[in-house]
Amino acid sequence: MQETRPAAAAKPARWAADAVAAMREGARLHLDYSAQSLWRVDRMIDEIRREGAPYAAVESVLRGFGAYAGEVVARQSGAEWWSAGGDHWIRTPDGRLWDPVEEARRCFAGQGSLRLLCRDATAGAR
Image (cartoon, rainbow, N blue to C red; front, side, top):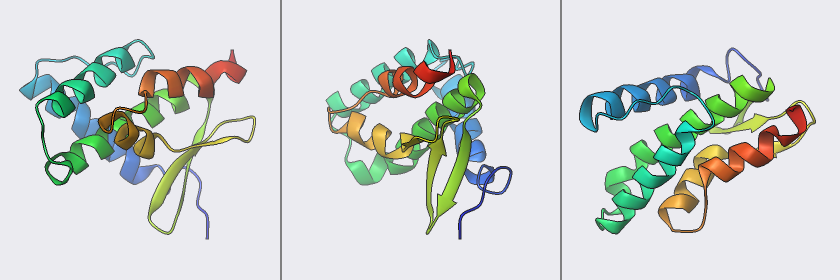
């Protein structure tokens, strides 16, 4: 069964808020839910990858960064969180589905960009 906001958004919104707090306190990095802030998140994920952190050690951080990117998309475009089977994704008003949590994992693997996901997902909303 699929759920829409607010139920489906509860976990990702909390993960995003946790990531914002952790970055503010630990890395002195201010994340303000703007599309521009995703440049900083992409760079942070890149730094974590270059340091050689094992995936298991950063899995929840990546989930938080992905949820943060999803919240940015939701705020910029009016997208909504959807969930099914424990997975969470964003549905933009044009009906497209986006998986920012998976995109954060792709970033960690050197193959993705939360900034570009946001740009592409919000392009129809402008």
